[in-house]
Image (cartoon, rainbow, N blue to C red):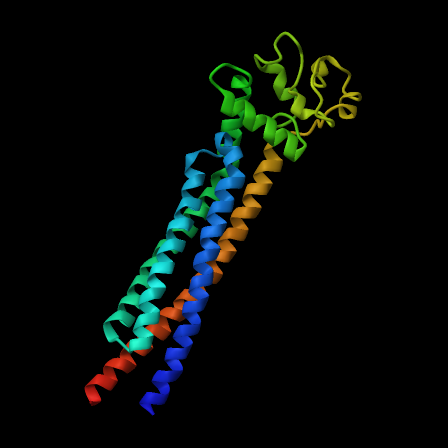
Length: 247
């Protein structure tokens, strides 16, 4: 009876190890994608945002390593290796919960962080030594089809438009060189025919918040699977130990 139960738990643990390998790969890919996609917005999001994707990659690599203990422990019916697997998996679960809490806290702060960095970026756009800020503004305005932080008039009080009354060409409906020239001196009803008049703050905030929420949901799903894996590993370790004691 004990042997049959051990085989059942062993096969379940194998199945969970396969799932862990997939989740580890998913975390690595997700972390790399986030790092790549949002690196363009670094000047608006700040370095704190990019700690999360780095953590995801690290955790994904550790999960790959941990599955070795799970597989070997199950194959050899080794009590210590199986127990080590469950302990290491529990530590990973704690780290993921910490990352989840940090992501949720960042979600609450994201609006303020982006607004502050955007306001600073407006004043430094086009200046020598601020190439990153200039490129970030151009990318955000072009991709999100927006202009300025709250609206296109935000460019009015910047050094970039002090003399020319212009907005960056990345604000335009068609990104053509010189298309943003003199926009701030035009009548309000003519502006939407040339540029995107709406601000970028709400657009970027919505994109980041939705992706952080989705990431949190994925994390919860992985945590549930890992918790089940910990239970099975503990049960298998206890069954193996019981088998040793009855020999």
